[in-house]
Length: 513
Image (cartoon, rainbow, N blue to C red; front, side, top):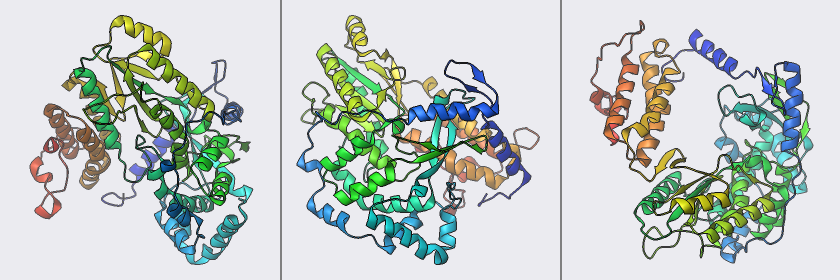
């Protein structure tokens, strides 16, 4: 709307339709029966999330060893030790998205930025008091939760993702702490973790995963390899706070910093929004809030326990994708896990033991229904049946990892039909007949183009598919209001030229091949 569209009735109608589609009309009870009474929704959701966020037991013994090289050294400690300043508060506020939904306080970052001259002193005094005393006001921990359906027409409580709307003053305090220690993460987090660490990219994981698949295709070594994709059940919602506390101590975080972080993380209160109405407050005993600035970094800090345990057994697990290179045992991107090893029974048993220990250390659980295993070409059917029985995960011929399809066979054009379907649904969801030409161009250039760019950057997509995608864009751009295909007034190659050369800066899919 900032570039090309007016605040028209269409946008209001679109927003209303989207709001209606997010309405919860039915919820399944524990016994599977569907409840349609709106008044009962609160009771069902409260019971589910109270159980989900209840205290979990975790084993704080027999952990993998933390090497000195993986801990915070003295230079980093000196940075973490210094007092917080008003300048850091301003930097944190400036980095916050102005239009994020507000929490229980009703004020977002836009309000603070526009009235900073009025609220600056009071905000700084409150945050400074928290840093000095090490005690966070209970009101700051009151968090509104909105439920985002993972699938269309979700009815089961587990099919909703809880997104936390934290208060602005809390996000400022937590953001300042994050800015202090995020530069330490590349030092303390394993290189196998590609998410939320400065200097690391999702592309690294995608390309390495494809190299693993290529090796599984070409390797003639017996008995072959297996690639296991793990799905963690409610990853953020089940991490124990005691685990985080001990991990930070073993990583040599400063005592004062640990105290501040634990105050931010522990014992929040939640009120869930269901169809516009909030439930009563729920006291959580374990959870990393999705929406808290600290949660992603703290999660991978704890998740690195799995990385240390897997790497510690690289004599049994792992694969060398080339000569004279280090073994790759696993890949992590947040809670997305790939593990590769030779298809021996002892390797599978070792892996099962590691996963069991990790779940005991953190309170997490593995979703056996969504986890899957892919075997290399040299693994016999008899061996596959034997290993499947030990692992308990389903066997697949191909799998998706970070949006990229991995398969032992050569991918064909039909494998990318889903990309075309996504492209069409992304554009058609807006209704081309109601958008101006400028609005259509903007839609093609931004969210749509970014989606295609990711696929092209990480996959060898056939040119025929890319040409189909370009055709979808052209038809969307020149479509008439009466539903007919309109005249193409400007050639597609011209539209794809930079604006300085007379084009519109559209990145054609086929041009990136």
